[in-house]
Structures are given as C-alpha cells and as structure tokens.
Image (cartoon, rainbow, N blue to C red; front, side, top):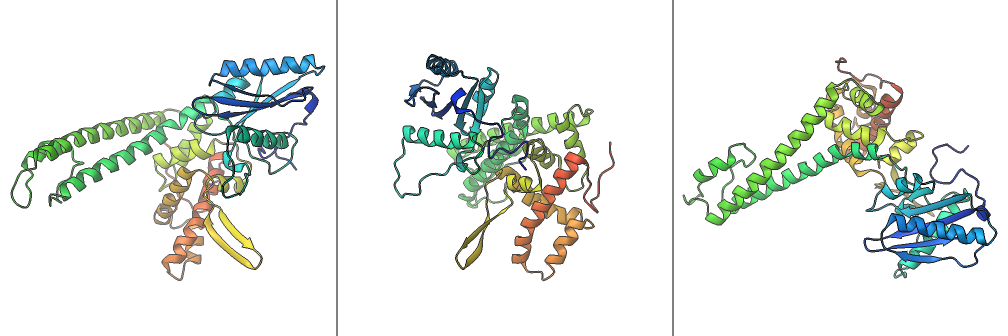
Length: 387
C-alpha cells in the first residue's frame, strides 16, 4: 500500500497531454533547462543565466506553445538535483503554482562505463527520463528530497554552526601545540583564558624566549581562538535561553522531552530534533536508513558478506548516535537496550563490542524517535524530572 509520504514515486496520476515536464541542470554560471512540451514534437533545451524569473518566463512560454498546439496545460512540473543551491528555488516555484521537486543526486542510476561521456546536455536528458519515470509512479527511478520550510532550514543553523566552530577550535589548538612542540615546549596550554599574557614568560629547553615571528603568530592564533570560543558560548547561551521558555511548537517540545533522558546532552538533543525528529519519516526502517545506520550487503552467487555501514544517510546523525551509544552504556545501565547489548557482548571481545555498538545506535535512534514523536519511553530508561 503506498504511503502518503513515499518520495520514491509520484502518487498523482500523470496525464502527459496536459502536463509540462521540465528539468534544470544547475551550475554557478548557467542553468540548462530541458522540457517535454505536450503537442510539440521537439524537446526544447535552453541555457539561461541563473535567474528564477527568467526560468518562470521560459516555462510560461513553453506552456503557451503547448496551448497553441491545441493542448490544455493544467500542470507544470519542474525538478532539479539537490546540491549547492539547496531548496530555495523549489519553495519559490511552489509559491507560484509550479510543482517543484528536488532529486536525490545519489539515487539517479548512471552508466557504469569507465570513461562515460558527461556533459550538461547528457545530464539533462538523463534527469528528464528519470523524472518522467518518477511521475508515472514507477519505482526505483529516483528518490525525491523532502523540501523543508525556511524556518525548518534555519532551525538547523545553530547546531551546524557550533559543530563547525568546535572543529575550528580544535584546529587552532592543535596548530598552536604543534608550533610549540617544534621548539620543545610541551606544557603550555593555549586554551587558557590568560594564555596570551603567559607567552612572554615561556622559554625553550635552551632557556631562550620564543622567536619573534613565532610569538606574533601565537598571539594571532590565541586571538582567533578566543573569538571562536566566544561565538560558541553565544550559541549555547541562546539555546539554553530558548529551552527555559515554555514550548511553543513541536520541535521545542521534542527538545524538552529528549533533554530529560540521562546521558543525552542538550547539543545532541538539539541535533537529533532538527535533523531527524521533525522529518516526516514513515517507519523505523526509514529512521535507521536516514541516520546512516543500516548495513550494506554484498551478495553475488555464493558470496555473502557485509561491507559495513551504508553511510547513505545523514553523517551528523550517524556520528552523534555512535557517540551517544557509548555514553548510553555508562548512564543507562538498567535500560533494556543496555542489557540487550551486554548479553550479546558477554565474550568481552572489543571486535564484538564495536560491531554491536552500531546495532545499539540504530535501536537507540529508533527508541528516541518514538519517544519524541509518540511519547513512548524506552523500557528502563531514566529520565530527569520535568522542570
């Protein structure tokens, strides 16, 4: 039975005589638009500058050509591959009565030739055939991405910005430690608040002060590090302030509920809510698949093996859940999930634990999804008292 949120095929019947079908191959300098126009024998192909208004005028022009050919156009559909431009064009077109879809680029089957020809024109023809099959309701042509609202996209920014800033903080700290290690200095901590003031007193093993260029470089790096740390603190303070307020929408209520789980920090809860929980995922298999925590079987003839994680889902969710699974073993020892893990790793082998932690992360993600969406508390899980 087809699901209402099944994005692997179109659930609306296709009348090709009254539907204008177009695809857009997007780049930074130009857009190449190919179309199937009812009543027109040729398949038009037009390159334009990246301009949404020019695209809309082109679609209306092709619609007028179909009307002149005796066709009544009741539906205009447009698709393009997910990429750098995100979802803004799909939202803009939908607001103007055009059915817009965003194709998962990795879901489109391509030629397996070693040196296949690749041009924008060939890619447009491939997208056109793929999109036409999807509109017919045929499976496995491609998969469409769920188009978020502007508010849903914006809600992800604090967590993603903090992740980038933490990486930058680590990079700067390691860079300064490496610069000092080249001079034989290993006991200096550049992350301290007064690190810049203490640099003048630092001496090499030979008793010499820091060379002037190295000293100036370290001062600049410390200034950048303090700036990054201040920005991280701003993000965390703003998030805690929002968390203290009464829930006003579903994501806020989900965040409050997940934050009550022992061992689940605010950062991880925020990431899970805005990356997974707010999405309209149809079942537990879709949740595990989106989290990138499903296997990749390799079966051919008598060969039967697993290649490991498919890694086709959200990398942020996958990394966060693997870290959370290890923390869960420490903070939720009486939960049914931890006891399930311990029963299957009783041999004490690290290889077994590393394999089973993936299964625990998958089960834990599904359990947290049920907790956030339907309020089902996982058996044995300890919760903090509600504030």
